[in-house]
Structures are given as structure tokens and as C-alpha cells.
Length: 256
Image 1 (cartoon, rainbow, N blue to C red):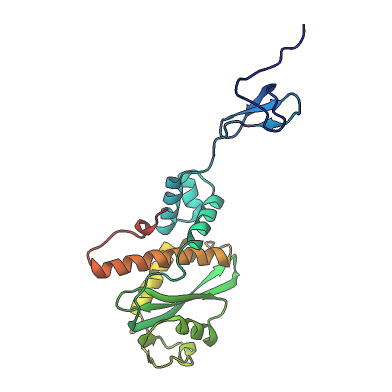
Image 2: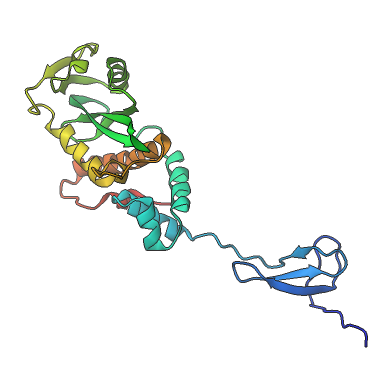
């Protein structure tokens, strides 16, 4: 008895045009696959995307903005941490070059904090400049050493400022502040705003949390996490200038 050829109406081989197709299992998304009996190639007539929805991506970015690591957010949403890392990279790359911030600042406070990348052998310094009135980040820089040159490059990026304030670290004394004044406070008496912002960084950027094994895997990943936080933080602080009672979280400023 001759073998009966399978025939599925509407299903043709996209390579040779033959209608002699047989079923050969399903894809990961559950769609049916077919194999041509003439050329032997496989095809999926009605492919179904297995990509995550925009709602899932937005929720993942909001969890990261609220201080969760990519792994923790992935476990909650049942997606891989690598996928969240790719979504974060795509989102941060599309952000404006500069976050929202005041055009001028009466007092800008300078300070630094340190962290590690991969291991404690690779130390990194995060230098920040914060407007005292709005507590917006005027500029920030991630460097391997907190030198006078690194601080000078940061100061040059800060817009019109009447006065800079810092602690007694020697690197701040050797910087050229152009026409702005520089006030060195005793202890943290003149850097309370930037100290508060650095504490927020430790809280909302998981790679900066003070943990024994909580290090960033790369400089690029750490910069992306800080960029996301700074954009969300500055947007909220600028909105609070118009609405002082505004108390929503940072994740409200992430939208796809």
C-alpha cells in the first residue's frame, strides 16, 4: 500500500513552493512547524513572538529603579537577569544626554563615595556635584582615582554656580573654580545635601549598596544604573519645585 502524503491546506514551503508538508513538532512559543517532503526544509507559517510584553519590560525597569538588582527583578518577573540588562541598556541609551536640572545654582556641594567593580581589587570613586536648593545632581563622574584632574573635569561640567562647597579633602583645594567661590566646611557642615544624595545612591542603586559581595560586574553596567537613577531623581526633584507635596517614587518617571 503506497504511503499517503500529508496535505495541509494553505501551508506551502516558502523555499520551493511545494504543498507536500508534514508536521514536525512545535516551536518554543507553541506554534506548529512543518517540513517539506521535497526539499526537506522546515518552516513556520504562523510564527508567534516569544518576546516579553512592553508592560513586563516597564515593570522590570521600575523594579530596578526602586533599588532591586537585575537578578532579583528577574526572579520576581520570571525572566532572566540578562534580558533586564539588555532592556536597561536600550532604555538608558535612549535617554537625553543631560538629565533635567537647574540652569544655575547658588550653592553646589561636592563629595565622593567609593565602590568596587568585580572585586575589591578594582576600586572606583563616584564624584558627585549636587545643587543645595533642589538636591539635583548637577554632574557626576565615575573614575578609578579621585585625583585633582578628575575633580576639575567634574567642576567644568557644572553650569553657572555662585559657590562650591566641599569637605577638607586636599583634592578640592587645588581645583580651579573659575569665578566661583569655594568654601571648605568643617567636617560635613557644608556638604549635607550631597551626603544625603549619596545615601540615596547607596539605597536605590543596588551595585552601590554596602555589601561584602555586592559589586558591579562592569563599569558600563554601573554607569547605566547610575544614569537611570540620576534621570529619575532629577525629574522628581524638579517636579517638587512646582509641587512641594509630591511624594511619588522614582519608578513613576520610567515609561516605554
